[in-house]
Length: 135
Image (cartoon, rainbow, N blue to C red; front, side):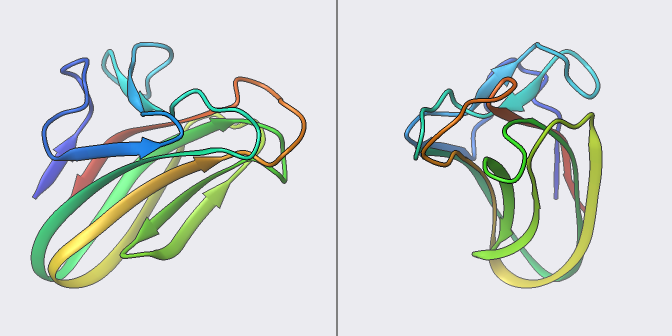
C-alpha cells in the first residue's frame, strides 16, 4: 500500500505537512538511500507535523525508521495512528525501527509530530523518519 523512502528529494504527493514549520526531504544522514524526511525548524513551544492518509480494510503492518536529536525528556517526536499515540522519543538517538499491526477500515491517518517545550535547545532540535512501509 505504501513504501516511501523520500528518494525523490522532495515530499511526495499524498504527504501533508504543517504546524509552525514544514517537514522536508533531507540528505543529511538518511537511514538508507540519499534522503529521509526531516522535521521543520521550530522554536520553543512550537510543533511541526508530517502525515499521510492510507486507505485499506483489514490488518496491516505499519513500520518505519526514525531518529531524534533533542532535549531529553522535553522535546519529542510522537507517532499517531488515527489520533492515538503509538510511539514517542526524545534525546539523542541513532536510527531506530518501529513496527506495529493496525486494523483499519477506510481512511487511516499516520502522523509524526515533533514538538518543543518552552525552554532549552539541545542537539539539532529535530526528528527524522525514513523507509515508511504499510503492507
